[in-house]
Length: 186
Picture 1 (cartoon, rainbow, N blue to C red):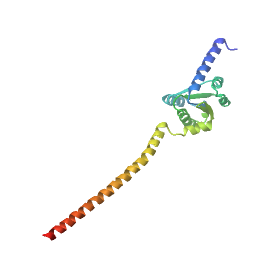
Picture 2: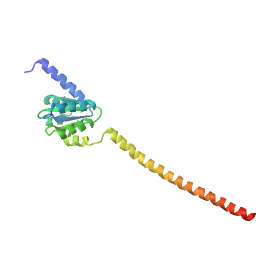
Picture 3: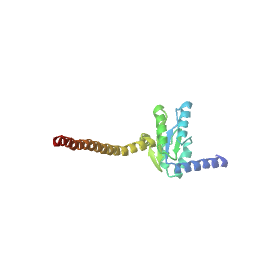
Picture 4: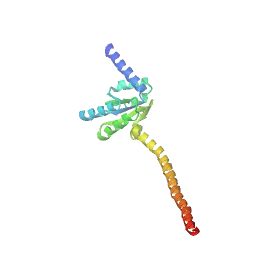
């Protein structure tokens, strides 16, 4: 039987994890097995750079924290060694980074996750990982807005250029007629 001190420590860990899971925009649960120290170091650095918290934690603690925040369905994925990546700002970041490593390392796999308070299966996490980054989406949107405006500007310039070519031709014709009339009058 664990001591009262150990139980209090576990309760504190569960409370902290539940608080993080409750305010996170997304989280990804991965099977943490078969990853080398070198790959793990690179993975953790990439997650830190993206602002993602990544922890290898006992399944029972993840399960209790998930129950506290209404994500109890994720407990069905809690078998073996697992790690949890939580993001508070970018819902796509943990999925993208972890999928990259899951594709490289055969035994490292995405088990599932949660997105804005709802548990999602691994297939949804993988689809989320395929979404382009925020910067790419903004660039695409601006490009799609800029395209019609560029087309309009080109069309207007073509009209101006066309009317500009005809105007000198029509102005030269009266001048030429006036020149022909003048010598005949003399």
